[in-house]
Length: 275
Image (tube, rainbow, N blue to C red):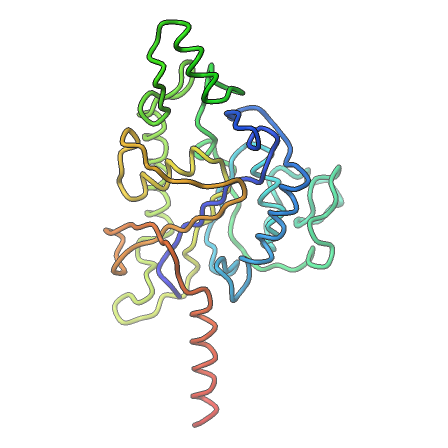
């Protein structure tokens, strides 16, 4: 099993993500194209021989916003646990969407591929934009200029009026990262004391653009004030892990082998058959 990883997934496309409006607490549905692309992402990246192996997931964190929750549904991970936002009395299965929406995939609705718990948490909600909610960056800068404030606004340096400061975002993300490492990653590296560790150790986070970019920056200890210069498009997937098989060296994983476990399994099977 590879070293522990965190997969960060930004929710699919919405009308506001299309036109660059800051979307924090406002509830918006995914566009039809957004849903289509997330479904395609799930089919391409989720599976025993793919980037995200459902059986390796130890925990799933999801934002309280509906657009993030819908994105998790559309990924079709095959969760054993019922989605927390689905009414327990609903006749729909766990892998189905809410009663007002069609199932994610009728053919796989009963297929359980992961036993990871699903946790809705405010720790991974989008940056609180406060007075800037629903505005484009150009509109924010113009408003500041009209009011005699510094028009060279940068969320990474200045935070948001009436919303969260950079320090507040840093504090809540640092607490979450510490929790993830303590609960799911410490002692979960591939080979501990000569004994292979087979317990699921990956974590999946489904949330929003700014907060996930900030999360990635804090994962490697970078100050948000320095502007992490990271991009995560709507529906995008990022991977975080560690260098040199140690929790002391967190890293952003730019690319990795998706089929290593499968290749090892095939190789072992060939060896056994040749004996």
